[in-house]
Every structure is written in C-alpha cells, then in structure tokens.
Image (cartoon, rainbow, N blue to C red):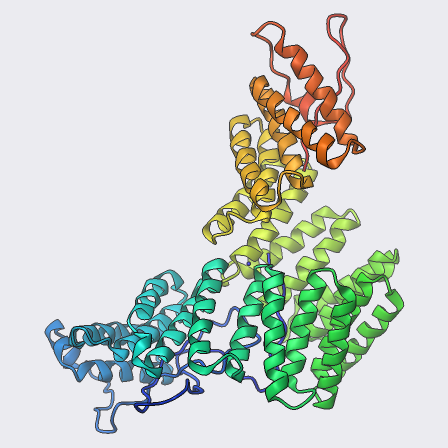
Length: 602
C-alpha cells in the first residue's frame, strides 16, 4: 500500500485479532461483542479502529472433554478417526490450548487442520456447519501467525461460503467475522482492492443485522474508511468517516475519545485532499477532546499533525511552536531516546530545510539518526524505516544522494521481512531507482525499478497511476542501457495505464507519449512516432494551449520526422545520444538540416 499513516487507536480500544464465532443461544437478536482470541495476529499492520463486533473463539464444548496430554493422542493416528463427531471439538480445543501454552503455532496448525477435516466429514448434508466455519477461522489465523498468508486465503475464502444469512444471527456473525478476517489477510499481502471488497461485504452484513446507527457499525465504517485512505480513495473515505462521526456523536458523550479519533481521521483525509483549513479545524477539536480526557501523549501526537498543517500553509512560526510543544511532552513522558522524539526531530529538520536554515536542519537529522541507530526496546522496524525515509528526502534535496541512498537501503532492509509492506518497499525501490538514474548508474536504476514493478504487480497495483509512472521510469533506464525493445514495451504499458487512470491530457501521460515517440523513432518506426506526435500536438492545440515550451519541441520534431518519412526508406535511425538530451546542440553538415533534439522525459 506507497502508504499514508493511519490515525492512532484511542487508548482502551481492544486489540484487533483474527477470531472466530462463538455459539450463541438460539434466537439471539444481535451480533455480540467478542472477547479476544488466543490466536495471535501477525503484528504488522496496526489498524487504528478495530471493529468491536469481531467474534471470538468458542470456549471448550464441555468440561468433560479430555485435557491435552503430553503423549501422542491415538485419535490423531488414523484418518478414519476423523469421522468421530467428538474429535473435531477436541482437536480445536487442543489447537487453542497449544497456542495459549506457548508451545508455538506449528503444533496448533496440525490440530487445526485435523479439526477442520473432522468437522467437514461430520457435517450433515444440506446443513451448513458453524463448527466448520469456526475451525477454518482458527486455521486461517494460525497460517497468518506463521506468515503463510497465501495459504490462509483459500481457507478463509472457504469459510465465508458456508454460513447462510437467512438462518439467523449466528450465521450472520460467522459471515461477518470471515469477511473481516479475509480482508485483513488480503491487506497483509498488499491486495488492497480485495481487502476493501471484503470489508464492504462485512459491513453490509453487519448493517443488515444491527441497523445502520449501531456503534459497532460506526467502528466498522471507520475501519473501512482507513482502508480507503490507504488506497487513496479519499472521497469514499470521507463519506464513511462522516458516517462514523455521526454515529459516535449520537452514542457517546461530547468530546469523547472516539470522536477525537474520528476527527483525526477526517483531518488526515482533508490534508490529503489539500483542504488544510478543514483539516486544522478537525485537529483542534480532536486536541480539545484529548485534553478533556487527560491524554497528554495523544495531545502531543495531534500537535505534530497541527504542525504539519501549519507548515503546508507556510505558517512556519506556528509550526515550530506546535512541534516544540510535542517535543517537550514526549521527552518528559517517554525519554530523550524514544522514536517519538526522533519523529519530531525529523519534522523540525524538514521545516528548517524548507526555510533555508540548512545547518539547523542537518543538526536535527543527525539527532534523529542517533536515536534510530540505538532504538529503545519496543521500537518497531516500521517506525525506524519511516523516519529514515523522511530523512533521506532531506539529504537528497541538499544534493547528498549517496547518503540518501544509504538511508533508503537501511529502511528497505528493515521492512523486507515484514508482511504487508510490499507497496512501501516498492515505493522505496522506485525512489532509489530515480536517484540511481540521476547519478548515471543505469544498471542499478533498472534493477531498482524492476524490483518495484514486480512487487506492485504481485500486490494487485498494476492499474494504479503510480505503477504507470514506475513503468515509465524503468523504460527510461532501459533506453540508457540500449534495451530499446524492452523500453518500448514498458512505455506502451505505462501509456495504457496512465490514459485510464489520469486521462490523455495529464502531464504524466503526455510525458509517456513523448518517450514512446522517441523510442519508436530510435527503432525505425517513424510512422508510429509521427502518429503519436500528431495526437499530442492536437491535444495541446485543442485542450491544453500552446504556451507550454514542450509544444515547440514536439512541433519541430514532428516536422523533422515528416520530412524524413518522405526520403529514402533505408534511412539510419537516430542514435540514442541525440534522443536523450533535449538541451544538447548537434553539429550539422551541409546535407543535413538544422534540427532540435528530442529528449526523454522522467
């Protein structure tokens, strides 16, 4: 998911777990609030607003069930024993007890697999088995805890096909839990669109069972809103966030912690859309709510967000004041070497860089790097990687690309084994690729772009504008390595994506048109190059205007190609040296007309 940071969970919010439904009395009228599952969720992606209506693992079926023994259980020795209807509940209990005892998920996985097989064999034909659903949820959660997300997906997909909503609340609860758990799993492997679809299906089921004003529906709306923020679907995220805020204001006390969390999410959405004044209003109200509830650290975190808004509005003195307030609170409550302190140093470094105070900026960068070099216990790799990435941008802008590349490499190494970070790593690799390209290290640039492209393809991002831009950049690196056929394929794919996502008149799309035309010319496909340039000039003349300096370059280039197309067929294609640098001057002979060079565009 390149990724936006989500709003923090209000203190006291229950930890999100991958969990399964508990049997309920017949005739239950609503989805019940769950207890935590003993099955741990892989601690990668922190969801700020877990739905409190997630279901729980069922307790032991009976106190009379045999306790787990250290010796091998004979019931596990023969597959024929799986037909015993008492075996499934026993194995499921063993799986849960194994995890709770700290023996590790590998043994629990064996029990859970056998339990699901037993429930499936013993299910009555035509009667959907909630016991089977429960065991599949546990099995999926164990796969996730082992990092085997690809294996968890088919298990959870099977689980959501079993419940029948027409059979009452128990089945609705099982279906809701399954969709939310499957959505979390898709999110962990970077397939954001599929994740959002699962959350939406879960929300529909929850609204049908509880109504659209229940507080638990509000939590799920916020959960889904955050997923849309990660996917940069800000309009949909804002709609859901407004609904969440309305529900919480109706069911909570004024200035509640829940309302503050909703307003922080609204501020994040407005900031992403460039509506800084609206974002600032929500942040101030959220800060007042946190102050009323005595949440000093949360107030400090909001102060950082307020400082970011002030910096976007070029109100730098007010930004410094907000950052310094947050810094004082974090130092007193968490210590001088906490990553929260480092994050404020990074923000101050960025501010002083923007205002031209480079010495102060570098000093704050160095202070932050000292903290990240010796992190305190409990610091996550994601926190350090985020800080290093921000600092690298500052070093890059002050013309220290080698140092910036070192920081990006460190950030990528911290994330490489973390599930759910494929898009973040792809964004880092794309940045490294651009920097390698600018340094003339074209092999390294192409390798970085290739890594980014492969990760984005695997995560389902192949239709995003960002993916199209990375393809264009990889094509440029291929041109520099004289891999012209490969470059043409990359530019063609980038063109198709950017036309769909941005439209033909967008600057990124026009840049790809220009690069593709130059590549076709280098390949000797003059007619194709002429066709593209005529199309681009028509767009500029009819829709964009001709004031852009690129217009004259394209017009002159088209005239040159048209002239060449009327000459002998066996002409020599232009060398790439003449195509890549638009500012270079070419020495002409008497037989050549003076021409303007055509450049590839990043």
